[in-house]
Figure (spheres, rainbow over the protein chains, first blue to last red):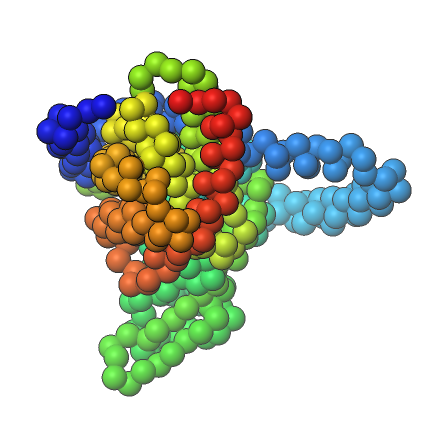
Length: 283
Length: 160
């Protein structure tokens, strides 16, 4: 048994050590790299947690009825046909777009490649909207890389490990994404509110033309997200004469809380302003 | 951790608690999810204070921090405090009736929640919402069952 005084000095030591760690983590972004390596320690736990869900899906696939699979196959074929038609149109549009951009001397060529990734975990803390995905720097993921699902922008990679990484969702209260209204091109910023159901557009003047049902697409102005992906749909516009700004809420179009298949978009912005401070991100 | 028999059982229970705490939950349920790791720690500190103490708590807290991506050291701080209090009071806690024990657990988990809320405020999340205290209540309600399960595990494997 420990003597009381010895336990107390031990307590003091451990507490000081913990506080020093918090201080270092809070003040020096350089410690992020150490943290990334330490995350390897808990990666097995994250894999284990995901195992039951994975096994369930596998088993489901295994015992699925043949008819069901055939039906699903047929439907996917039809969907594929419809999508192909869209893509054919898209090819023509892309060429036309390039030509027009050429005419306008626009600098950016919007060429995007994607990495397919799968969600393997959620952040257990409900205040922090982050998900864990099963690809990391070994798969070519980079810090700050935009993440989308089939219906819209999910977020961006905020912590990069060798085999897994963390994605900060657009709904996290530390996240903001530059957007524009698809209807009229009005630019604004959508702030996460710590709620999966809405983002807030905090800096729109009362007189701006914005209506319920407007689609917000990424404007690409922060040079982080690609241009033109849907981000949210406006659900609520309140004009309060007592306030300088309109209060606008928008629902994220991405399935923030139930998407499993995610796409990481590689964007090749050629011109990055030199004065843009990315020191916290590009390590 | 001092050497003794069936150390693996203690490790396994901690890993299981970490897994439970990192489990993806349906929307809404994550607010009322018990704090598994501090509870399991409280149990082992109470049952075997000579084997599970501040060092174990510190390492465990670091792992929780890595899983939650909170500030490194935050959960280490709160778990060390919890372990210290439990190791100080283990004789009294063992004598307590289940209800009193659950009440003690409630207070210890509340301490944990306050510290982690403080960390969230530090990272810029200042949403005023008292939902973060809900896990304390749920943990206290779950405690009797967890206690019985862990005790029967300890007795079956003769961990001492």
